[in-house]
Length: 140
Picture 1 (cartoon, rainbow, N blue to C red):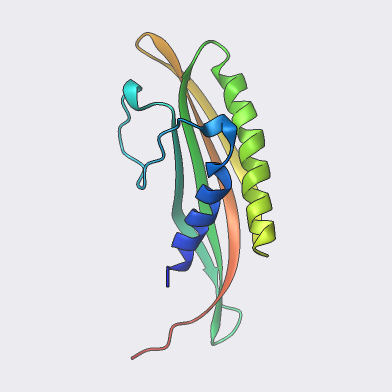
Picture 2 (picture 1 turned 180 degrees about the vertical axis):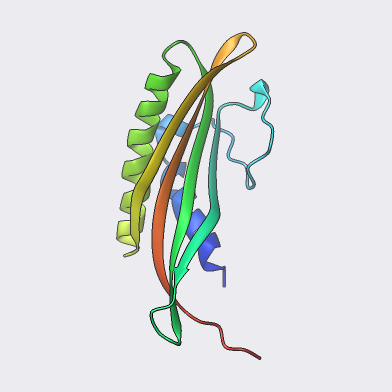
């Protein structure tokens, strides 16, 4: 049985896999620290952080940060392309978690564009918060 954060990443990846907009994107299992221009465009799914609350002795509420990252080359309209990416990502990801009966909302969105030598490169980071309720693992 997969860990619940692995399930969160899988749900997000599967929701994006069938979108025509992202066909041909590299989708690494782990987000690389450095990306060269030949690797672009890239679509990444990460769960880098989690907040926890303990409402009872036996359970915990987990609010997992799910990030979807897109990095692509483009023209002077690369930010516009990333805005369009964000629309499709938000719709697909939130619908997938709704179908799974899990709370998921877009908490933050960042778009950064810069020049990488000869072309513009844009990065979109979408931060969703996914809420799950877990039993506290029993000690051995």
